[in-house]
Image (cartoon, rainbow, N blue to C red; front, side, top):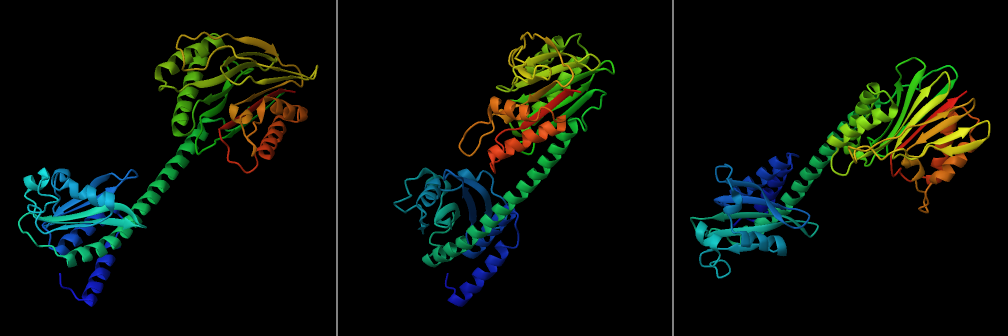
Length: 417
C-alpha cells in the first residue's frame, strides 16, 4: 500500500474512532476484522483471542461482503496462527503454495492459500490475540507496507478489544452483584424477622454471612401448642450460592419433617433421609434442634454433628455442652439419631453457635476457640440475651481485627428468666 504518512495517520485515526465506537466485545471484533479486510484488500479475515494459557480461539471470521464464515478453524493455516501467537512475530507470505515455510502444510495445499498476512494483537508486550487475513485467488497481493499498516491497526485494535472486554467484565460483575443482593434478601427473608416473645423467656439471634449469601441459618419453629417452641441452628459445609441453596432446602425439609413426626429424633431422621437423597456429592449440613416446653423449661435436643451448644446453669454457676447425638444430615440416609432431655431453670440459658465463631482467626492465625467463647459468655452471663450476643460480637471483632470473616457466623441464645 502506498499511502503517504499523512494519509496513513488519518486512516489510523478514523479506524481508531471506529473501533472505539462500541463497548460490545462481539461488535468491536466484527468492526476490527471488517476494517482490516477493507484496508488490506483481503478476501477473508479471521480474529482469534488468546486465553490465560496462550491458546487461541476463533472469535470472528468474515468475508469481503461481511458475511460470517462457518467453521473457521478449518479455513486457515493453523501453523501460521500458532507461530504468531507463540512468538509474537508477524508473518507475511506472497505465495503460500511456493513458500518453503508453508508449502508442505496440508491446510495450505488443501485450501489453496496464496497470500497470507498474520499479525499479533499485543498489549503491554503480551500476545492477546491474532489477526489473520488471506487471499486464495491472487498471489503477491500483500506487501511489507501492508504488514506495517496492519501491525499499526492491530495495536489500536488490541486496546479497543481489551476495553470492550473489561467493560463486559464490569457489566457482568454488576449483574452478578445485583443477583447476589437479591439472593441475600431472599435468604434473609427465610430467617425469622424477630425473636419470639414469650413470658418468662428471652431470645436473641445473630446471622452474619462471610459472603453475600450464607450456608448458615437459624430458625424459631412454633410448636403444636402455644407453650412449645423449636430452636434450630445449622451450618452447610460450604459457602456462597451453592451453600445458600442447600440451606434453603434444609430449612424447608426440617420444618416439614418435624411438623409430621412424633419426636424430635424421628423428625430429624426423616429430614436426613430426604436431604441425603438430594445432596450433591460432598455436601452435608450439621444441625442442632431443641424442642422447648416454655411452661416447664424442659427441652429435648438432637445434635446432628453440630458444634456442641453451651448450657449455663445459674443455680450452680456451671457449664455443660450438649454433645452430638448423631451424624450430620446428608451423609448417610440410614443414620439413627438419639434425643436427650434437660431442664432450664430460672437464669439458665443455652447458647447455640456455628463454627464460624470458634474457627475465627486473628492476625497471628490463632482460633477464637470454644474456651474463649465460654469465657466471653461467662463474662456476660447476667446480661439479657441480646446483650450477651452483643458482647460476643464485640469480642470476636476485637479478636479478628480488620480481617474479613472466613466463614459464616450465626449465634442463638434462649434464656429462661
